[in-house]
Length: 92
Image 1 (cartoon, rainbow, N blue to C red):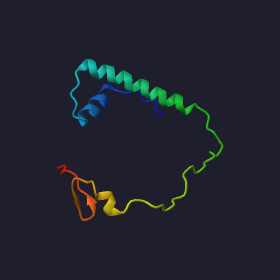
Image 2 (cartoon, rainbow, N blue to C red; image 1 turned 120 degrees about the vertical axis):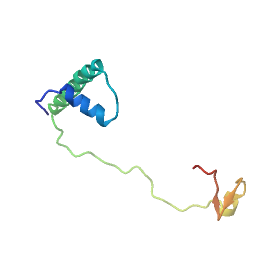
Image 3 (cartoon, helix red, strand yellow; image 1 turned 180 degrees about the vertical axis):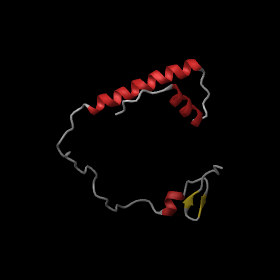
Image 4 (spheres, rainbow, N blue to C red; image 1 turned 45 degrees about the vertical axis):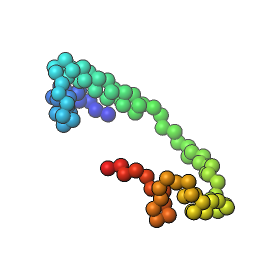
C-alpha cells in the first residue's frame, strides 16, 4: 500500500484537522498505531481474490395489496392528527 512510514507530523496534521489536541506521548502512540494499521492493509492485499460471482437470490416477497384499516380507523385512537396523518410532537 505505502512504503512511506507514518511521521509524527502526519499525526499532528490529522489531529489539527480534527481539532484534537494531542501531547507528544499521544502523538508517538498514534504514529505507531497508524503505522500498524497501514501494515494491516498491506496484509489484506496479500489475500487472494475470489473469482466467482456470488449467487444472489431475492428473498423478498412481491408486494400485494391486502385489506387493511381505513385511514379513518387508523387515526381513530391517535392523540392528535392533522390532514389525515398522525401528528407528533415538534422536534425542533
